[in-house]
Image (cartoon, rainbow over all chains, first blue to last red; front, side):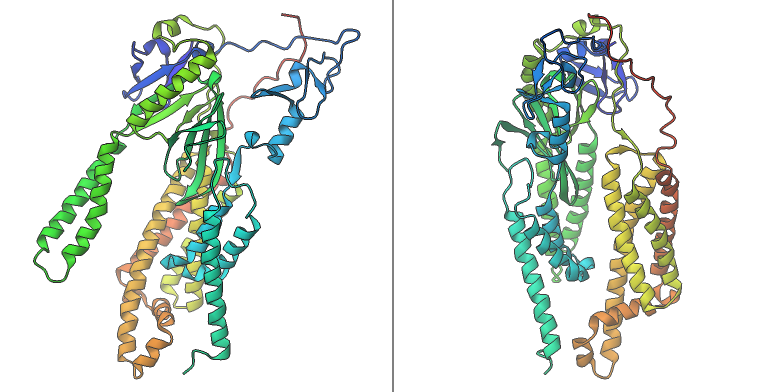
Length: 196
Length: 355
């Protein structure tokens, strides 16, 4: 039976509980919610078709990874001939599962990436950390760390959503001032500039 | 922020922690941000329009509570402003400066409309769309995404009758709300450090020692930074109730510690000013070790001198130890209660009859 879930308490309920305009009251939390159902819900619960044997006939190419299966596609990245079992679809491209794994792990294609570290934000937060009253002492290691991270990750990919280098620039500017201030203070103490 | 890039168009934008939603050519891109005040990493989820089964949204009570809190704050501040209007100390001006952003936030909140929760259902997940927090936005999002889903699924949105007629014989695929808890070294270390930090805090109240005070500060700051990181990490998983309670309790304890710490610093500042003023060479003393005098005042303060702050520190230390010990068993034995499900049957071998 196709089911929808309550967005508040996650309780599942049969779709025929839905009223005509998609409103429904959850039997568990008694809260009203709106649900828009799509044709994919009608197919929920149908088991996908099982894999059938498909050995290559004489003169036909065999799958590179499963030689007992007929090759039907070509990997768009490495070019090997693959069967349906080893093929994955991404947009308009067909790739083999090995290439898919490789692309995901190495982050070679932004469409396959599942996460990215925001180094610009990390550098900026390190640069700003000493300005908090309680962590002012962290300037000793936070400023050089912010400077290092900002320079080291100047060309690193930031986010798949476009964003500029403004955060990195601000982090470098603040951290540089902090490092210069510390150097000036240390030199002053060493050479006795502050002694009257 | 850009409204479009490449083949993507911005559908909804949340605050820095909620992330954003982008409309792609054949999929919906959900950008989620792991953050504490500022985002540290982003994770991306791509949901094909052809796999979206349903979009559900419901009004929540968060908006009502936000309105109540802000109205109460404004009433209290207004009472203070009216009471101090003829006072020459300028208290009414200070209170007005505090009240102005609260009033602005209330107006923006009321204009934005009621709050909501919006979720998207596929065969294997029930995804919370965090950027969508207002009913207006949810309705607009649903109106924009519905035609795309219908176009990719080759049909109109289902009527309840059509859905009711589509009773399937096969078993429903289990929908996973969150990933099961698999344990984390970060959480374990955070809780261990929390226990140690709590014990050191209690010891620091009774033992007058500068070194112990510094160790206490370092332990406390490190423990709470790790706890915040642990909370951010654990949000991705379905964690045991004890662990959840201990982590969130530790966060509340962290806020209490900060408040108590500030109170302690303020008390020590006034106390050391009095001491320095009464010393023989006050101007020299002020120029030199004012900060050191504050720390020394705190570390050398006896139980009686600290007064209620001593009891607050003992409570905070005790709570930190309690929360650490509460969560440690769940963190050390990851998901012991959750992996009770029977082992699934092995998949059938590849190969069979031609359909």
